[in-house]
Image (tube, rainbow, N blue to C red):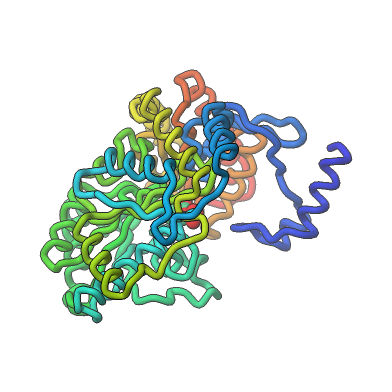
Length: 460
Ligand code: PLP
């Protein structure tokens, strides 16, 4: 490590509180400082190469050195580095990106509101839904239905919708009215002897029972990731979304698809809702919208939602919501260029093709003694490690083996995400077949090392 690195490491551990990190352990371990990126690879300050198997945070679709995004950002910086969209103001990049988003999303989606993060987009969505129901004269219709293990962000409202214990614990969340329903993951939440179809039927019946118990006139919206990602990469059981969609229509409940990870081709389809065949009233997008080169997110919604809100703004005289950076010109210019690249290079098709290869290779690992379930869709996969394959018994201390494998991955030049004892993969959408092979080789080495350690430690 050179002097600069030493001083960086020291400055980091003495000044920064890191997200999703044990701060006291970090003070001792220090950071892994990532210095530069190229394609699907990133390099740390000791010059070590890693395949970014999670595309940063499930987000860098076009890879880590796309010159067209750099050019789009600098051209917009030079022309108009900032302007806002409050009080009738507008600028070309945000208008063009809105137009593009309406064009590429399902036909019921006709309107766009920009924010900078997925969390802000979900908080905005909650406020829009409340505002709309007040405007429509149904002030009791404010509660949300979400799912255990769902991830929707960490701000006060979005963190309430998230269904993961660490996002609630000691943060006094949930702080908005929300009911978390059973996680739709058949392998873990299916009952003994239950078929997948019976599992789906049970979950839809549970949702209906909660609606009736709370009163349909109090339930505003149902939110879910079409394929649950950050909670452990869990595709829905067959028929699940159709069942939930039917309930939403029956009880006049808005259906919100959180597409923050699923969207823009990741599953090999344009959006998760398209992939699983349902029609949300509202979609939340971010991450791959700019390949995370700049912070940008959006709430996308139907004309019916727009009309109710717009009428109320006319009554009040304004829409009392918005961020300094809503529709930021540089971020939206980069978003527009990024979507063009995804389209021109058919990265959605590549995600479908490379995803099929990756999923097949991973599925072939199902016999590995450590692996309980391999799951995913397109270029997103989860590999769940278990103590006992036959009974699906998890490890005694959840997350310990996952954490080891995460570290072992680094040793083999691979960055994965450990979610408990599930390893998630979600590489950049530009990945080639040779790179899928290389990623897989590094993944197998990581697993083998982990299996050796589990045995040596007597963890199973
Ligand atoms: N929604 C989903 C589905 C996500 O995966 C995330 C982040 O991972 C968010 C919302 C929150 O986005 P952000 O981290 O930009 O606030």
